Amino acid sequence: MKHFRLALVRQKYRPDGGAERFVSRALEALENHDLELNVITRQWQGEIKPGWKVHICDPWKLGRISRERGFANAARSLWHKESFDLVQSHERIPGCDLYRAGDGVHRRWLEQRARVLPGWKAKQLFSDRYHRYVMQAEQQMYAAPELKAVICNAEMVKQEIISEFGVPAEKIRVIYNAIDSQKFLPPTEAQRSVLRARYQVPAEATCLIYVGSGFERKGLDAAIKAIANTDRHLLVVGKDKDEKRYRSLGATLGCTNRVHFFGMQTSTLDFYQMADGLLLPTLYDPFPNVILEAMACGLPVITTPTCGGSEFIVQGVNGYVCDALDVAALQMAVMSLPKQALGSAEGEKARERIIDCSPQRLSSQLISLYQELVG
Image (cartoon, rainbow, N blue to C red):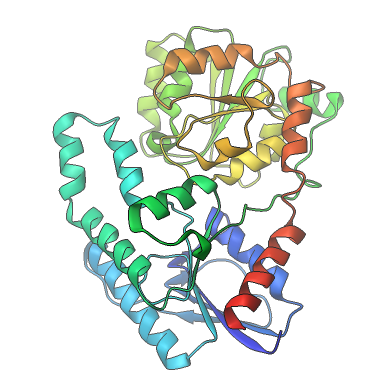
């Protein structure tokens, strides 16, 4: 590939976010090519690798809409001024060459969210000015003549974009996220015992892990209800300002001693390695990395049809797919998983399924897409 200048657009660059991990994998993949990397962002957290150029666009803002609109306008005028060869945006900004739909389709998320809200609040959701702004920006971006291609991390999102915006299928690439399957590994028996002792989790218990911040969207409510009438434990990793409400739900259902809150963790590996399955009854999620991480650690997965990660689940073989609000089905799935993931066929099948999702494969898919677009 001839020397070319790529711009990546992401409002807030947090090293631990899913989109950012995709970006950093992409950047690492491209480092050996003759490529100038530019990141357009409002705020950058984390290290800046040599050779990367970071452009800070942080216009004055008053409220959410002005924040979105201000960043979009500033980013767009910057990329016009710089005339990059390719602009890849992770934000809904009309005029980019390549969009990565990491957040899925906004209307589909609102439709799912409306299911857990009282009627009047659900109606309000669609007339809310901020949500209307996001849906309009999304519409304009997909209709813009500049848009050459879209990257989705799930087939589910591809189908939603086609039906919602009429984008031709050949413009959309499904590129699954990568997982480092040499870092995320099933534990040995000994490691598992040590971890359980360290975090005071009963050695013999069957433990499901829930990983994610934003408890409402990721379905912690349903996860707690699903284990309430069983003998299973739930390991909750993540943070939310409403944590108190979820703790008291556990108390009301009489399972406080089986729901363990661990808060936000910089490294989640220990928690996967002492668990027996992932329980993620998320309302809407394009393809959370936690599914790949859990499967790499040999955990069968219970998730929902509105989660792109369900594409990797074969019912009863490496997990179960149940509606996010169907507590009875979720509870049945919880009880159908093997009592211990380690050494189970389901756990092995889970790991087998993600082995192809390597960083090397992701980078070769990206590089061939870039070559095609720039060529």
